[in-house]
Length: 112
Length: 111
Image (tube, rainbow over all chains, first blue to last red; front, side, top):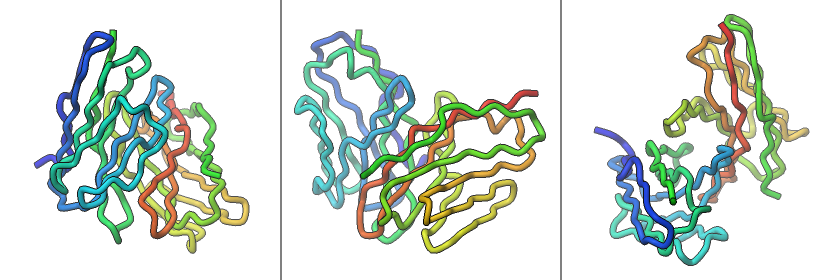
């Protein structure tokens, strides 16, 4: 009964490949997020969707494309992976009108 | 501005109190949070405080907010080795979706 889940947990791939990370939440929340945590543990927001609509799009390369098929899912597709994309990617969800957001366990991406 | 700053490292002895500090720049922040991240894990919400409060206590945790100086602190009483982790403060303005996270403070508790 995990609240926010991500797959895969680990992803090792070659430079130039295309990969996807999936996120699902069973909290009934209407807003979902993708964050990137670099090797220094700095956490930066990338995207946010509210009711399947993109509401936050920070300065992220076009190679990153989020997709929200429904309120409970937010996937992240990355084209032409680069070494600098190696990081931990966290999904989170929240509900408008509530105070907090909840994080998934993270996907550790390593680009070789 | 959207900067949230924290000191990077803190080391304390088991049983002592730990104080982790955070400064933020956005005066419109309505909610301020403390998250804990253990090695290899996601972020876990510890506590939060509304901007109209000065203090909040929750068991071993005490949050102090100085809105004038835009300074937030987290005090952990009787720090245990299990408290060793990275602690992030975060802010959010009312009516927005965006959470701004601090740089994280690595707390090491020595036995």
